[in-house]
Image 1 (tube, rainbow, N blue to C red):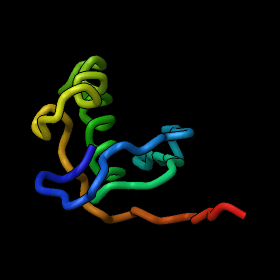
Image 2 (image 1 turned 120 degrees about the horizontal axis):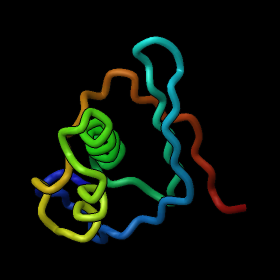
Image 3 (image 1 turned 135 degrees about the vertical axis):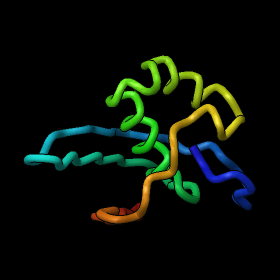
Image 4 (image 1 turned 180 degrees about the vertical axis):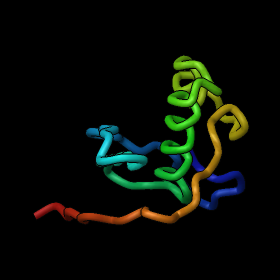
Length: 92
């Protein structure tokens, strides 16, 4: 899950936890904890999950997105509206 043409030297990131919760009428909270993020990674992950939730992609699309190097297999990059960085944890 990264933008096409990303300049990252490595693309492997470990996601430790993620969750999707309804947070009120018309509001969904997607939380993800990882050891690092690629450019637009969280926005593409959220866009893919939204497409699955709306029935425009099947559940297997998530697996296909992880296994394929092709950006067009995943859902859209959602706008940054509402995106927020909650914490950064550095090793002691």
